[in-house]
Length: 188
Image 1: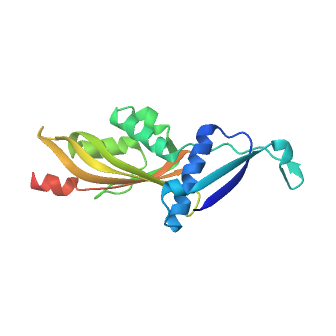
Image 2: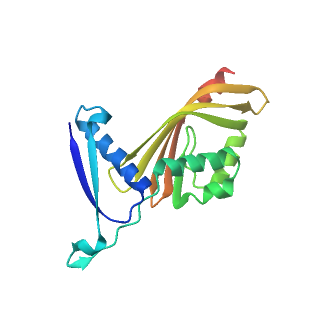
């Protein structure tokens, strides 16, 4: 039964500590073959008046936003056609890569490119997976199926997709997309 103890400067919300507890449980289970209910996480709050580093009292850093929520909000904005709201979730150096095309840096480019492929598209999500990457970026994968309408008005559905996002400083810096839309369209 693994036990993890974490000491943090007082100031993180119950929700932020819950995220820490889940992340630490998952980190232990990545190495130790233990069911979630067998991993104990204890978080100790320390008063900022009792925490010194370099001889100075320190304040807690602001918790990062949940990267899965950032991606879900972006995808929701895109699905609703709220492009300006979606654009606010992107880093200035954002890049996206779709199958069969050069990298794009603007959502307007995506709209122009997509208009030659389909009239409308929607995503049904089977799941999201979020993790910390090797560097500063958080990585979020989402997977599911696409449905919509081809440019000739005929419907399509059940097309597999996987999107991979990188998030830094609570902004999306990269989106990579893999799907079977070209193969499905060729068969239509």
